[in-house]
Length: 342
Image (cartoon, rainbow, N blue to C red):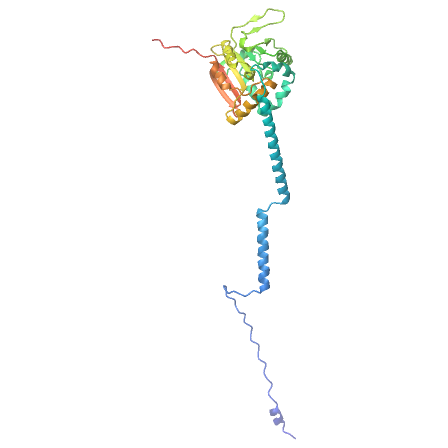
């Protein structure tokens, strides 16, 4: 028998298992660079290019519909401007060929029935209703309205005298004692009379006259069933709105009106239209003036300031609106300056 000890010694020893060493992670340095794959680099570059292209389109691109709208709008505006210029050129040529007399006041005889409708829209757009009211409410005492037309100032009158504060801020009598309406056109006067009787049926101190403002006399009120009453030889207030444009000699008319205005506290109130502050607008008014005068009886290119200065009246107040084409004046007779004694 073999020795068991020998057999045990003959067996090779069992290898011992070694414990695995823990894996260590290699730290990447903060600034260390690493190699990308070529396909990844291409994808990133394409993405950046797409983002950049999209940003450019969002920031600077214009949608086709907007471009189409802008193009059509520009074409429409240019065609309309061309039409206006062509129409203006034709109107100027036609206007300059007309032989229009200086006195065109007779046109109002044919336009009286449609006058209110013709001027209503333009006066509302320019706010002339308020300017009429502010001027008319300054009237007091015995009042004369020259070139009254179709009575567009009638709603603004304060009829009947009363105690109050006058335009100079002093206590006194305000309101209208009498009112005389004057116009060259009998048709215009008839419309004014009809309107007045509807608006103020109880007020009897009123007169309506068809005649020339350049020769009108002192105030006179005729009452039914009695003789005419001659009032003081002066008007306390003379009012005119949009009338100098149709007078053949407006400066001479203003001088005459000054002679029948109460010398001390009397006033002449004007609201007129005429030349502008701007030369380019004056050229348009000048070019179209003959046609406008022939159609409407109004020379809209008159220099209202020059007319007032030529009249010799004293300017108390002057205002202008609408690029200078609307003029407001408060005038009075020229005050005599007492010469110093030698």
